[in-house]
Amino acid sequence: MSELKDFLIKTKSSLLSEKAFLQCLSKKYSIPGYISVKNIRGNKSEYLQFKDAHYRLVSVYLSKDKKKLCKQCFDSRQDLEKRLHEIEEDLTLLDNIQCPDSMIVPYKRNEKILENAMGISPSHNLLFYLQYSKDNDCYVIYYYGKKMLHKVNMIYVNESSIDKIADYMTTAGLIVDNDCNKQLISSHDLYPVKSKKQPTVSQTNSGIKYSFKKNSTDYTITFYHQKKKYELQYEPYFSDSSSKFDAECARMGFFVEKYINQINFEKGVSKYYERRQNVHTET
Image (cartoon, rainbow, N blue to C red; front, side, top):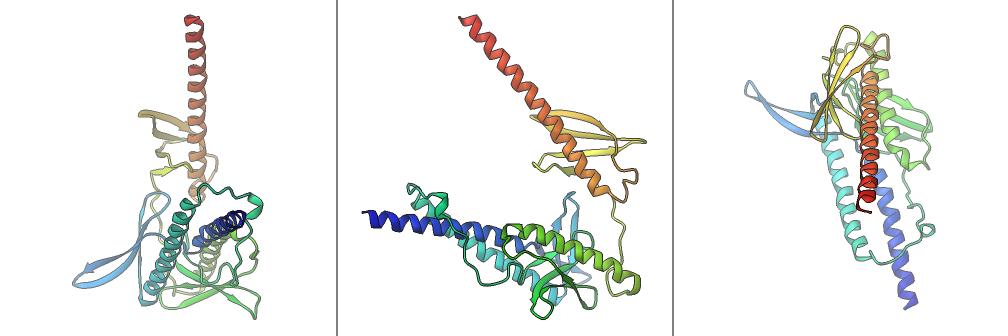
């Protein structure tokens, strides 16, 4: 009986280790959205469509190579999700088996953590993928311009920090945008920089949606909390908010969350005193 129990504990620890590994690994396939087919003047064209952080619909034209990259990304992510679903089913069967944290060891892997990772840059919406170069001992980011494939090195990646894959993919996207800006000075191959209309809606880190309107010196933020409408006045933090608008939006989100936390705290205190009053009254 003890041998069977030891076997089940080892099995569960192995499943938990693999689950944690695959959850982190899925972050390397960070191309969002779906492939849409549009009929333009009788010609069918395919686009990658998704909504950015400010709910703006983004459409990226897919050439043959870009479409192949997107499908490869979606298929790889789907395979990981399928395996994670199988692990969850197995863990359900082992729900009554107690597995100490000391038994959960890092999942063994043989490949580089960012090998064949795929993503899209946040500003220019350029599709890219990563491959490890033994000659340069670093990752090379390949990204698609309008007519050709560009590449730029990504120097530092800690291979033991698999939990940092999402951060590394964000960094890779920023590297692509930065290199794109340099290329635009001397080349017309890449897509020209388009001025983006500033959004009027966004959301906080916890998913609370809010809208905002720019006034002469500040912003008016509007949001709903527990079916009640709130309006706040927010003074911009950055003197040149147009160049750092995303950072300004993030600060608005923190401002909204801080206000909601204060509301919840005050309601909690009010309910506490109300319960104490009811107890004394009944006594």
